[in-house]
Length: 323
Ligand code: UDP
Image (cartoon, rainbow, N blue to C red):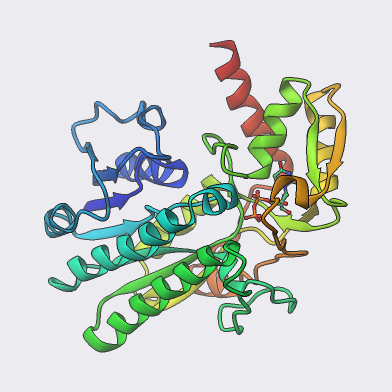
């Protein structure tokens, strides 16, 4: 198949592109290289079935041309990472809403299947665990710009489902839960690459608050596996899926594990949220996906646990530091 990946030079997009090339597909990556990186694509850059188009997902003419030329779209281009959202809120909102609108409208013309990346952030402040796809979404006040990301992604989901209902557009919505792994940058928050980099440089690992907040980290290789299987699954069309791992860890325990696995002498320090986000911040205490829908639909459960995730990121960063 001819597959378009918006955000194809990004963290998840580049891993997906490699996998699809390996499976024999033609892959076009659209990326403005704002947070995506050319170096993420070195292994396939010269492949005859791969091409990188440097451009914006907000460029509707370009998006139309690329969508017309493909059979299926993974729409992964987005402004992601709490730091980025807090530092550049209007740009993030416009990218996350306008980009999805452009892709969905282009896909509508020939009813191309579109996989829309959403996020576990849409569950917002919900405390009912684990989060199920049909649960209510509890998003915070507009005064706190953190929630703009969740709201933009919620609109993306609504728009995709509206086109599915009104025009039979085959859409699949992917709610990613704290996906991590090699190539993820720590620049925009993302705790695992941040902590690993700090540990390897013997710099302090800065835990926000008391560190009792928890997350479930999913390995990007598991996520890509789920995406590839969903691609071939007609029963997935028109539906929303949690994609991630349901193994929970507190941020304090994560820091300790990374110190233990790297043999680092770095200290773990706790910093108040106010010092990181002076304009105010609300963190989520716990976030666990219910992954039963994914399992029932494609028979998939994540295989890679936290230690494997940490080990892979450590190996990548050590190699990069040695280069
Ligand atoms: N966090 C932390 N130190 C860091 C980066 C993040 O303690 O240097 C915490 C953050 O406050 C949150 C968790 O780690 O509770 C996960 O943060 P991340 O930005 O990776 O993802 P989120 O789940 O917030 O989108």
